[in-house]
Image (cartoon, rainbow, N blue to C red; front, side, top):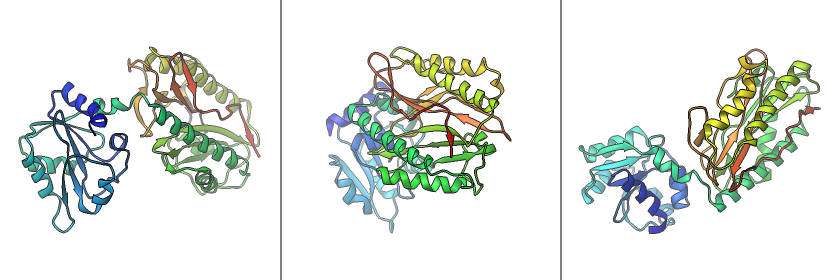
Length: 363
């Protein structure tokens, strides 16, 4: 227990906190090797700078919680009596005045329960410092990422082989989901995006009951999750044929993707990667189609640090994993995005994704 909690104790000490508080999510999963759902039943673990950890746990989860080998005081509660008494008991059991929480994960009602238990408690957002512990992936996490990406690429190849003119986006999405689970996915990294024609111009489109037709762009953005790690891949295809304008836009996005990946190495900043990638788009005849930054960190969360964007001076370190996903979009026309998952190595970078990026015509 002490070894796996020491990084979090370090965060508490560095921020002059009495403790760090975790709720179910990526940080909890990495620390304890188990997942619990965020629902109406609060579950919370308190890791003090020194001393034994404490937890508030729903009684119905006690069997599962025992399996993580938690070596601290547990305050459980039942639906019939409610959770507030467990929060009260925890804060009566220990002297805490200043705690750090995961600002992107802790829900308001859990925050309120802590304040009701200890009105003078100072609660600060330590999201960045806690999440920073996951910035550099360890060897087991990288191995799981490779598995997730391999599953995803196999599913994509098998799906594309079956796409035909007249199939709907929803039918293609259903095929993709079936192929992902058949290939070994534990779950989705996120709901897949399958978008054709004008729908592909919406970066976060939803699949429709609309048939793909010859000349359409078909954008597929998805990823399998395996062993708690997320893949995130986007490829854009064209149905049967594409015109010169579509080809030029595709090749511009591909050039940007390749340019960004080419400069990745330890010591290069997120700003430099985005700037290099985006300048290819800006210097093209299609700059008015730019809609978003270059990428985001990837791991137990589908979006996490480091964010690959201008103004982020964070330097790349070995073990960091992030996406490079330039795109060009025009509403009522079409969109193109090409996304790879990049691992920073000791001497440079490796693209964990290997799915062909050559402009591909389907069916």
